[in-house]
Structure formats: C-alpha cells, structure tokens
Amino acid sequence: MKEYNVAVLGATGAVGQQMMKVLEERNFPVKRLLPLASARSAGKQLAFRGEALTIEEATEASFAGMDIVLGAVSNEMAKHFAPAIQDSGAVFIDNSSAFRLRENVPLVVPEINPEDAFQHHGIVANPNCSTIITMVALGGIRRLTAIDKMVACTYQAVSGAGQQGITELQDQLRAVTLGEPVQPHVFPCQIVSNVIPQIGSECDNGYTTEEMKMQNEGRKIMHLPELRVCCTCVRVPVMRSHSIAVQLVTRDPISVEDARQAVAAAPGCVLTDDLDGRNYPTPLDTSDQDLVYVGRIRRDLISGDHGLALWCCGDQVRKGAATNAVQIAELLARGQA
Image 1 (cartoon, rainbow, N blue to C red):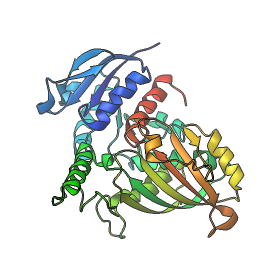
Image 2: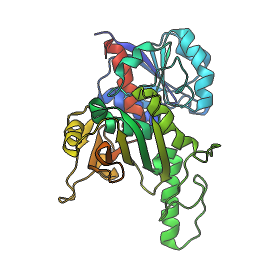
Image 3: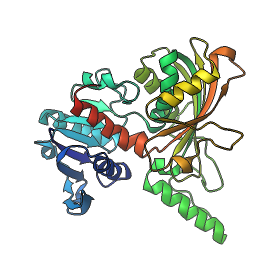
Image 4: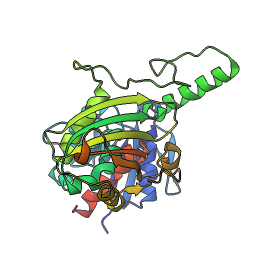
C-alpha cells in the first residue's frame, strides 16, 4: 500500500490535534507526519503513533515533499498558504471557509458527494460543522427524493468556538456557583444558564454568516442549486457536539417509515428513534465519535406528505471537522468514491 507524507497545518489547535488523532485511529497510511503551527509553538512536541513529533513553524517552504496537507487554520492563514501548498504538488484539504464556495473547489462530505473530491485542482474544502452533520443525517432521505426546502435550527456547543469557548463556559459556571460577576469575553453575552441566538456576523438579509452556510454549502454538496434554507444558529451551554432540528420539504411524498429505513441504512448514520423509550440523540451520547445520530423522525404537520421533521446530533470537532477531512484524504488515497 502506498504511504503518504502528510502535514497538519494548525496542529496545535483543537481540530488540528483531532486530525492527528483520527489519522492514527483510522490507520491512514502515513509515511511521514509533519505538524505545523505558528512560531510560538515551534519546538514543542505532539504524540503520534507512540512517537514525539516536533512542531515546525509553518512557512511557504514547509510543504515541499508533502502529498496531503490537512488545514486547521483561519481563513486568512488558509488563503496565505494555499498557493505554496498547490505549488508543492500537495492536495490541500482545508477546514476553513475560505474556499468552500469557489467554483473550482470541491466541497465534500464523503457520505454524500464523494465523487466531487476527484474534481479538485489542488484544494478540497471541508464544509461547516453543522452543515456536515445535517447533510449526513439527510443523506438517506436524499437518495429517495430531492429536498426542495429546509428549516434548520442548530444548537451549537461552546467548543465550536475552540478551547476559548470551553474555558469561558467553565469560568462562568465557576463564577455563578461562587456568586461572582460573570464577564463574557468570547461570546456576546453570558453563556452559562443561557442560550445565545447569534453565531457569526450579521448579513444584509438579517441572517448571520453561520446561518447562510447551511443554504449555500448545502446547495453545493447536494447539487441542489435551488435549495432554500431558513436557518437559525444558537449557541448553547453544552461542551461538545452540535444538535440540529430540521424540517424539510421533499420533492416527492415520503412516508415516515420509509424515511426511518433510509436513515438506518445511510452511511455514517445511527437511527435512534424511540420516543416512548426515551431513546433519541443527545450531545452527550454523540461526543468523541464519528457517527451522526438521527431521531424524532415524524410528519411535518405544516407540509403534509412532502414534509418531515427530525433531530440529529454529531461531534462537531470529529465528524464536523477532523474526521471529515481525513475521510476526504482516504478517498483520494483510494482513488475512487
């Protein structure tokens, strides 16, 4: 089996570290792994397959000899290093949003549109975390009929904002417990004992940048350019795993039972749908794994035979970011969808 030289750009962040963990867990054929980060992290070490790897400062010269670069950096850094990565001949699998909507850059969820990965010109984009989880949840239904409209409400864990989000929730919980004042720094207002109906900056249409990703990315991934999505993104005081409540309108009528069977058979999905038995997806049950759990599948009472409602949960650091990127690398290594 061919082995690959792999660089992880942004190796010290939560997603970068998870990428290294997933590469090891899934036994990706790595010949050499190069952890790259900023100058302040250079010289530190990260563990991989029982060895201590020394972090190097990321520069334009870092990518020589690399086959695959997994990116876990900001939009600005992704745009900065992309030309050097392409010039080196490596494929850049980028977790930022910098290239997701570019016409010549595939946006890939391997369970949904694996064939698109092979249309790359040196860059493959990883979708937004909530988009990935939602697309996997809808994959089986999409195989039965096209989806025309969707309402999605996301309930996003604080770790979606990185380690600083986790620290802020922990600090605020401690402050509330001790009766001390709460000082928000990462989120726009107090997150402990609260929910915040804003993630991302405001767009001209009143939605946020995070909310528009569900429509714009969903259209590209599912090859449904007319898909209409009304999305509301909410930050909740949960450490890990995002949850999404979805209402969808399908082109053809579909029964609830057919939808359940389709979800149960879909790759990457676990059907967890027993309301009487109190068995449904929760963030706690889906953290630190790669499957998307789907439940509460029922008829949408507004849209009738063409409407369904469901609830899904998935780990946004793993399947919503790191694992999806590694799965794309696996696709490219296999050479076929």
